[in-house]
Length: 114
Image 1 (tube, rainbow, N blue to C red):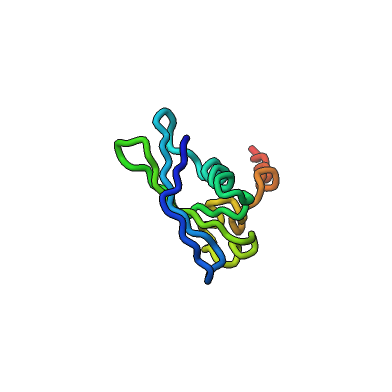
Image 2: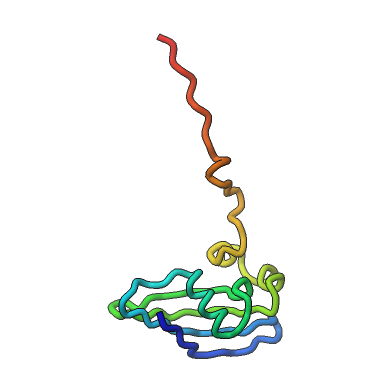
């Protein structure tokens, strides 16, 4: 997986850098968000929790994916600025009402009397 930054613009009003990127993955399927976030964080020398992938779209018939990412000055700014569903997709926030599988056990049904 090779990530190339196509465009990088500062946005001082929202305290972030806005990135457009292109991923070449000729021998692999479309990479997941976690791998892309880690690679972008490495390229721009920031912590992974400050990178938010806004969107990724694979181009039909090719082995390239285009996308947009935001790199915030802090994690708190990302939490305040980004929409909730984007934070959930990037695993920076838990889905409301979601319980871990261990706690989601259902009680056993009562035995039927004959």
